[in-house]
Image 1 (cartoon, rainbow, N blue to C red):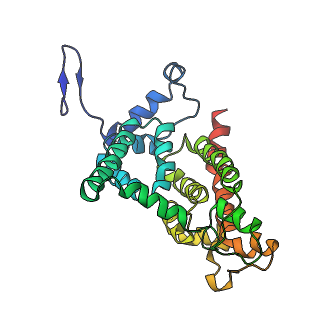
Image 2: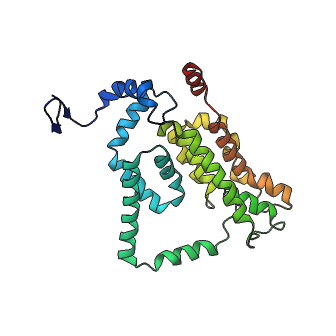
Image 3: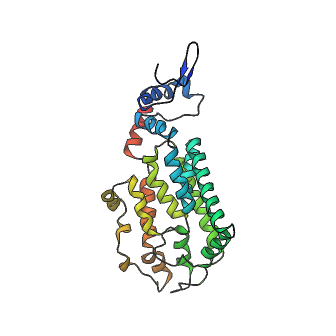
Length: 272
């Protein structure tokens, strides 16, 4: 009997351990089991090990919740937890995020939140080439030549949000059967594309999911020095290309991560 939590006459319950991953893999891949669980893809040993680790990842979930309170675009990862049905870390992250907001409200008052929102809304962030978001690229392209402070047309934000929703949905569908390690790069690229403040210096946040050298070959446009990027484009063609080079580099990375990997194709073929 190993670390029992609840003992009955013929069975006892205990917490899952890493050594149980192989048994969990065999259990979830059993046809009689998975047909009632809406599981359509085979699960391997690393997946089950990651799943077991995720059941007791409260410290990491708390850290993620605090980060989420500071950088709301990380909400894409919260959506991934929901799609992956990892309810415990998702709930822990939400609680930590709300607690962080509660501490801020207690220290500075609730008025700081609308003031912070108005301050962000009053600054024209989109014109800077370092803004690699989809909304930034669209706004730069349709703005008058050389404009760096004028307001973007009112239809830009709704259009960008519509496309962003499709990008997020596509990324979540693609990664719902993957581990967080396999999903990290695509989810982070999606978050930066969808956020109006998708600054290129956040690109280093994708490194946990991909080696820098592989990132260089997957999307070389992300490595172009800022000095070579047009800051004040003379026309809309330059605005959509040279002044939006980091957007295209990030989008190229998104496409590269979105397409099925060779390992994933091999597993799908083997399952058939």
